[in-house]
Image 1 (cartoon, each protein chain N blue to C red):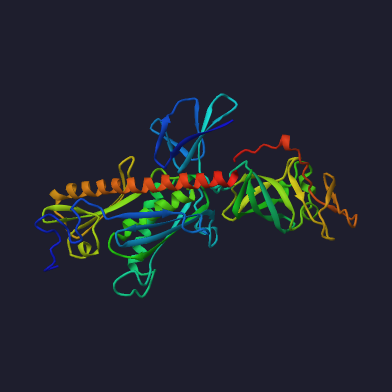
Image 2 (cartoon, helix red, strand yellow):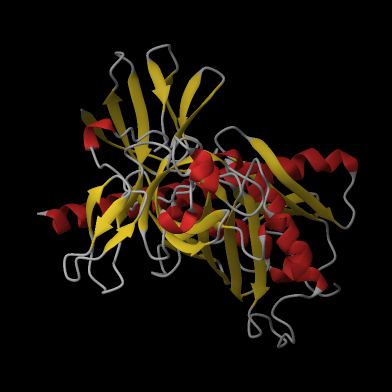
Length: 248
Length: 199
């Protein structure tokens, strides 16, 4: 995009961040009572709600049930008011369907699926405000919701995006940086074991720079992990304290 | 004997090295010779009979389970036909399910003796609460249950008059109001003989 300088000469980005700085992450677990697990996350101006139901008996006949593992069912939707221009369909369009599939693949890799054969886990993700990094925020929110639901997972799943501007990799890109036409690398990892469960790249990036960009993105997921981990630990001790009060 | 530690464990966190005295229980898994947590919660170390230590990570909220083979389940009869009866599984072992699972008891699995003389209508009625064991995960439709043990069968049943009946023999129950007798496959409830496996 002509005219917009994504990285100033002083080394600052449009929103005043340094190249390797994440946006502010705020999150809460257990926001819904009805769902088995739920979470809300804000990454800068991107706001996402996630709800998890299950494991329960497979809906819509047993035709879809898998005999040796649980069926992970995802639904990604964007609120009509989430983007600058009002959306017509919150879900079911091509982009949402692709996102749904990606979320499903990601969580199939992280959930210990063999523990609940012939049942189903539903993950509903709703983007309330979109400012870039929707996939990342959705994955992070869904991870928290799954932990809140007590569903066994190998590890957290943390996602982060990165781009490359003026010979410099930038991490956790916002909508402006995303839509500027530069490369966009999205990665989801199991941070404790540093395994990549999802990797996607849009646009073109020179091969020599790929490892640099990938490194900052993976570093970003580890930073995200620290934030999520603190939130989970706070939540667990809070709930435990509440239960003790309840019992006494 | 249960011992809860102060530390919070989260998914992917390493608990300790795996050795032959450690059993990975619920909320944990082993990988590359180490025990890891798969849930967020507190670690409980349980001493089992054979001297081994069972590791479990438990959350504050009760977690859901699914029926497994050999598990003892409590179910409500929903539908009786001459060949089998359908039921809704309400709980697995001691854990109550949030949502029911479908199950069925076939005619030949109702009791252990004289299997071919079983008449389903004389064993179960819709609305009865039965204790049964999961014998197979069955076809795609439902879990296959069995009541072919003395301790298994109908535990709660209401009579036509609408009151809870009392068992008078292994195959009959009586209504305390109308004194009418009805046929059931009655469970002889003896808690000391019941094995809560698979829970």
